[in-house]
Image 1 (cartoon, protein in one colour):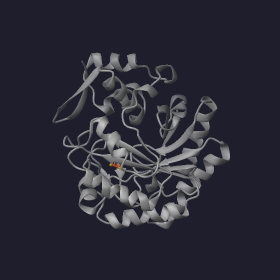
Image 2 (cartoon, helix red, strand yellow):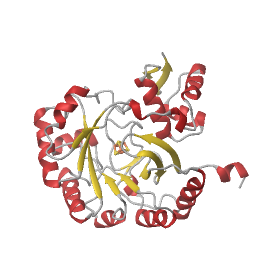
Image 3 (cartoon, rainbow, N blue to C red):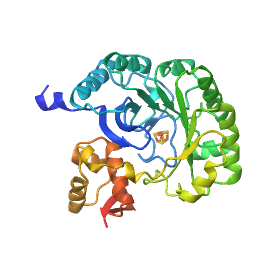
Image 4 (cartoon, rainbow, N blue to C red):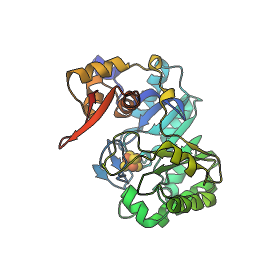
Amino acid sequence: MKEADKNRFQFVFGPVPSRRLGRSLGVDTVPYKTCSYDCVYCQLGRTTVKTSRREAYVPLKVLVREVRRKLEEEKKIDYITLSGSGEPTLYSDLALLIEGIKEITDIPVAVLTNGSLLWDREVRQGIDKADLVIPSLDAGDGPSFTRVNRPVESIGFDRMIYGLHQFRESYPGLMWLEVFLLDQITATEEKVRQMAAHVRSIHPDRVQLNTVIRPPAEKYALSVPKHRMLQFAKMFECKTEVIADYPSAYDTDRSAISREDIVHLLKRRPCRLEDVAAGLSIHRNEAVKHLEHLMVDGVISTMENEKGVFYVLK
Ligand code: SF4
């Protein structure tokens, strides 16, 4: 193996500044867009491998080794987050991975999951040792679930909800539920009331309301204005916050890539998300954060053609 390859990180990215998790070191446990859902709002585009089959996609020791190497380089990390560019619970060695991370550091481990597989006891046990788990709930009834999340056939709404209940009952750590709202689809009083009723019986430690900020997989996945998000937040009985739109969390000094690097790249040509990630040798999730902040600051915009969504300088 070449020296340069040995030093590269394939599965660990960041730390990226995150509003809810501080400086979060990401660990990608599944290949790009391997997911049990194909959400219409997905910032990574349409799902290419839609599956509920769990596999050891990456050798466990490779993941633990990369985390260890990164921790030797980076001292200021608030969370190690199992997330990435697909559904992390599809990784069958998740329990061993969390155990392996906990053997080398005291930094808390978070899991961002779509929650679709929590009905499976093995999956629940797999993330049981994490300090924080953030599953999603994007719909309050079956038709909305199918429309928004476009799950694999084997996962129906009732099964998904059952999984969230079972997980809450057995999991001793913190559970925050992310609720993603879409204008003209789920951001109505009736739909949010349905979701709030499910949330009441699941009783997570908190609810985080989110909406479209980054270019979604489908054009019709529309953002909900902030004032309406704040109104919807009042409909939940537990602690609820709106987490969409977080420009203040951005801090260029803390990032290895500066906004000038991205501006410089886009000066040469419009780029898709994957072009920016490849051009700057960073993970897609890291690229998406930088692009989001440049969008919020009005420096760049997007245009779409048959080859996808391109970022351009304004
Ligand atoms: S948003 Fe998450 S759960 Fe939905 S398709 Fe994208 S990666 Fe999968």
